[in-house]
Length: 390
Image 1 (cartoon, rainbow, N blue to C red):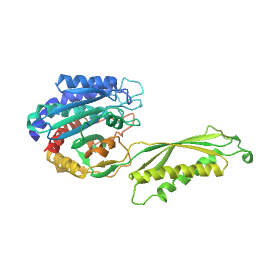
Image 2 (cartoon, rainbow, N blue to C red; image 1 turned 45 degrees about the horizontal axis):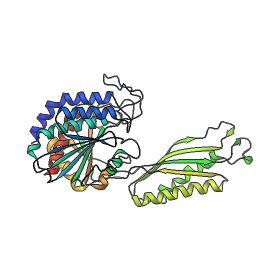
Image 3 (cartoon, rainbow, N blue to C red; image 1 turned 180 degrees about the vertical axis):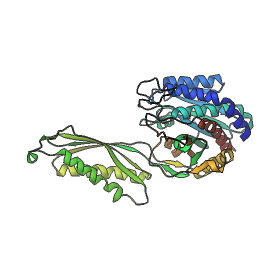
Image 4 (tube, helix red, strand yellow; image 1 turned 90 degrees about the vertical axis):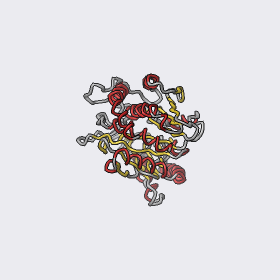
């Protein structure tokens, strides 16, 4: 089976590179992936793979039925949206859509899943069960395409397992990484408006200084992590935006803060939301000001099912060799595949895309991959799906 898959992967390699280049050159933002969706549909049609469209507007669901299709169902998922970043790569497939770029590798995920689709379609007489391929919009934007797809009934029945991969520039092409159990954090956005009374900086006794209130709020909210949280529960609270619009001698009326809160415990997450709001409001009230504290609840934590991940990791060792499969650490980043992991046994693994020279970080204007990774991605995901079915 492995040799069959590797031979097909090699035969379709150039075709997968071409579709990846096309998707990379024409990126689209979250929930606006209409041309991307059309390109994926055209590819599936060309290879006679049946699919349905229209779920969350641009989403696509393809199905490959093996023998005894009712026996088991495995889901393979790829996200299809891009980021609002201006690309700076000097390549012939550089983005032509101004200010939009596939800086998180979703072009790789989509083209890889198309490659897996070809492989699985050719081998459908060699496995029992059904493999559902989900091309998902809107991973990069709340509330997340995965959540919306679930709400629109993407799963008629809960699948036996869900599998997804994500590019990982820290790992060389040809290698993959796994972690079972808790893997990626939940993520919430904090939007805080502190309202005081501005005026001349030389007359602080005549104003209610929102700058000072903001500094106290930022410092005091760190208690959420250091004093209220259990030491064995990873949590991060960071502010990345402070805007006052004052001057050297002008205290503004308001200050806006924006930040992120991440953790792995849903009960604690909800309690932390209440405590953050109460602390911030109390500080501002005691200083004679007001605080508007809004939390945009983001993705839940991502849990990799132990058995599903063990099967996937074992398949990767068989397919790539033990030396090319690594163990991963816990991550405080987030991913909306977590919604799938909340309803079905799931495995979210990392695909090495580095070239061994310069690391091209995700979400940057120079992100790109060593395309040898596409030889790994298509075949390995197909093999993992078959092993999950068996």
